[in-house]
Amino acid sequence: MTTLTTATLYGALLLACATAGAADLTIRVDAVKSADGKLMVAIYDNAATFLRKPRSDLVVAPVTGSNTVLVKDLPPGDYAIAVFHDENGNGKMDANAFGIPTERIGFSNDARGNMGPPGFDSARLSLPVGGASIQFSLH
Image (cartoon, rainbow, N blue to C red):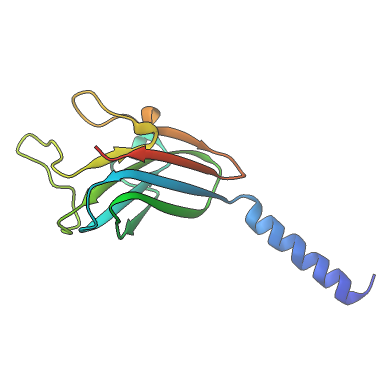
């Protein structure tokens, strides 16, 4: 084998190994009522940090109706997604005096809580090596 062929083969192997542990997640968020403000997307990877400290977060310019967000290169595993529509663009989820959100929110699996937000297990999705697509609505 020539040195060039060996180097090319080695480079291809390194590239394959570097991306072997990464998967893409396509998130479709439905029922977005306006194009005002921002969609705030949070990705959680465990119950202990759910709704407290996301593994990663994204800010997306919304469109009325359905919005698609592509999250690239996540390690395969379990995740829960939370999205809220920050219509007034103040960077936080507004709530009334009782702590009930006044801006539209949604969770993976269309999970809903009882007297509060859903738990991690209700919103949990499994991301395989090949990636996945999910869809849920804002309420």
